[in-house]
Image 1 (cartoon, rainbow, N blue to C red):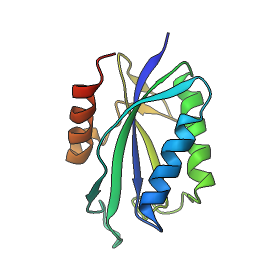
Image 2 (spheres, rainbow, N blue to C red):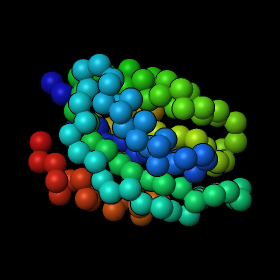
Image 3 (cartoon, one colour):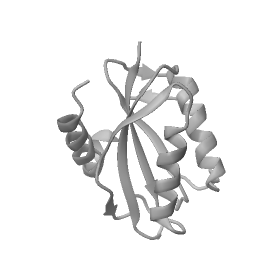
Length: 138
């Protein structure tokens, strides 16, 4: 059984377009996972108290046979390969990959919460989800 997973991509350091393109390619290369849709890329203001540059954001939808924890681990490897260092909460980042939603699943453990707890606070995620759900019909 494949899970349908919505993944948010964000970047506000370096060449943001190239970073997102590399991230999409890397996600497409995760075993037992295929990208089935992607939203438009949009530029958004940073969230949180730290002054920083604007973000490029995008959401993609994948079908995967991986367990959510294995998918999360693969996404974190992609972040690290892109130079992501988890130091400052809400700080600037080369690449941020978040599992926003897994159709038909709710998860709450120390490593992963789905739906993502920030979903109600991020209108760009809601717009991107709406765009993808209009395109993706399982």
